[in-house]
Image 1 (cartoon, one colour):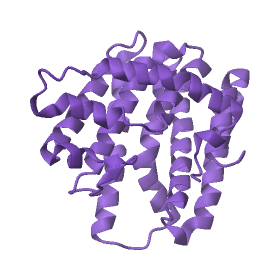
Image 2 (cartoon, helix red, strand yellow):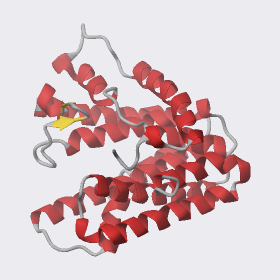
Image 3 (cartoon, rainbow, N blue to C red):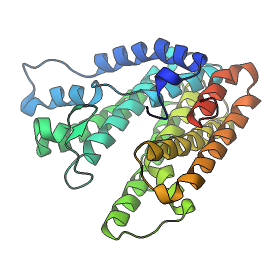
Length: 280
């Protein structure tokens, strides 16, 4: 059973996921065009296939949770939640391509390039990325700040840098230190978790310095999540013990921030302890 399994989440987290995932699914379905009469190359169909084909939706749910913890409403943060999931879907479509990870299956179905062709998979990723930033324009609070945050987190110094480091390592394999591994994890996974929490705080219109602390919370959470995912996939087994300790420490760091928020941070606290395996 996966380490991060919503079925084993603490009750407060499981209830939150059950309540917010339908909101997210409905919003994504509304944003992604379904008209097949004017769909050159089946581009719109591929966008829906890539985005609506399942997944835990942890990142967009975290956006909504962070917004409420910061004193806002979950619905106010829906455009930011959609942006995160659309951008996440784009990364998966492109990561699966033969030039990168060369995966034939994702979530029990053929990957986008297998179902629609490599050319349309490239365009599908491009379209999802474009749609992500367009969604942020709908925020009532902090649209410009949200664009800056997502551009930074998903850009050349974080998410894409993590992918580039991973590709470089694949071409020239070598032993990694745990610190080097966490730099990759911070880019490939942590960046979008950080953006999720920070965008939720921005949507709540709180002080920018506190928004950054929400981002730090998400980054710690994302690195812990990737350590758990590595354990599930039996990757980096030579560092398994140290990675497990790092997973716990990262989640405790996130939990410490959530505890500072008092009762408003209860959900974020439970989320952090769950990701860290502390309540498992």
